[in-house]
Image 1 (tube, helix red, strand yellow):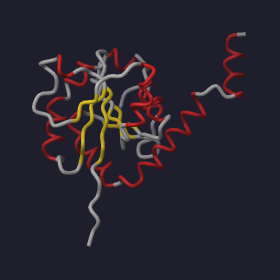
Image 2 (cartoon, rainbow, N blue to C red; image 1 turned 90 degrees about the horizontal axis):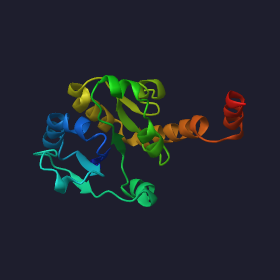
Image 3 (tube, rainbow, N blue to C red; image 1 turned 90 degrees about the vertical axis):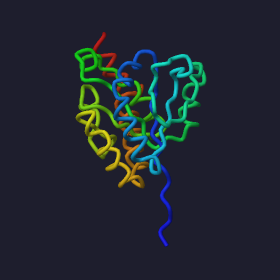
Image 4 (cartoon, helix red, strand yellow; image 1 turned 120 degrees about the vertical axis):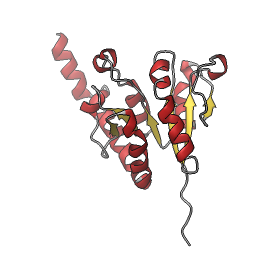
Length: 184
């Protein structure tokens, strides 16, 4: 008898800044929600959906209210996510903003990300090693199905993300010397 696999818990961190990007993926999220409902669980953390009538129609997801900055990291950890999905349109702003905060925030808790093939993600992530990359909206469901097939490996991929974050984005003695040499 085969043991039932647990649902892949996919988190989306939603803010007013990325609201329109997330809304642009409504059809893809709806398809994921409908076709993979017995295999995935979507969790949207942050944006107050109750106050937004245009927010992700016909989509089955768990809404987690935003928290204060003080409790933000506690909440990310408490959500017990398998992966975080970063939804960004391929726009000039998104391709040049170099905002990898969601990667750093989730890597802290060994949670890998599925991010767009845009800078800085496509420069930070090695697909299947320390995170995952999707090329287009249309590829998203296939990427999630591939991730589901290696769900047992996600803790190792999350650990690789955490190790990268600690090595390159923390204030170690070595990193502090490099920064000091740049500005002194």
